[in-house]
Image (cartoon, one colour):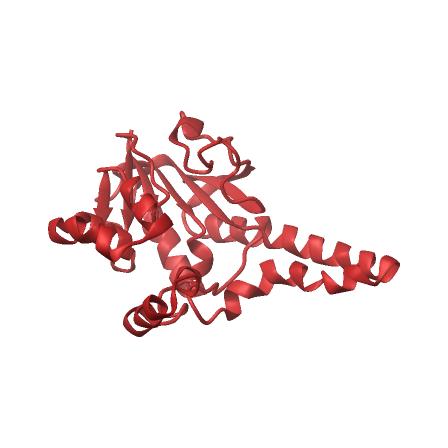
Length: 244
């Protein structure tokens, strides 16, 4: 079985069934023998730990140039918190490209922030503020954060946590959050994501949970779980579809 983990970052699976594909700095360092040796000097703290946990089944490739597989060769494709970072017209092309590489009947699994859930939590907290006031009003921006923060962020999160000199150098060399593709360009719920899939080569669209899937042995791959087997990115929407 061949499962493509698209735009994986450092969230990879060591399974021989999985091809982890990304163009991130971390994977480029991992694939370069010289930079690989220099990793302890380039990376620090949790970044170095994540780097050392990367498996060997990696493919360093810029997905903006397409998915590097022939038509109808993959059994399943998966991407988590990738689609919302793409401009809407690019997202359509990406879904079509994914359909191209899947076999007939192949499964696409998409994970995105659940806009519906975020909005429901926001509206519910408005009622709480009206009823209780005080401290609840002070907390209210926390309910706007999941909706707006990733669209307005200027500095990449990882860089913002670094010491001043490293922070300055990373911003200078790598650019801001938008340039690095960290900002959200659109948001999805179960309705507009289903529409996008049905219009671009997929059918049998179904909402899943983090540990349920049509992909055989999904839970064992650990891609939507943390080290303790819990949900890796809570408040996500999990949707699967079958190539028509």
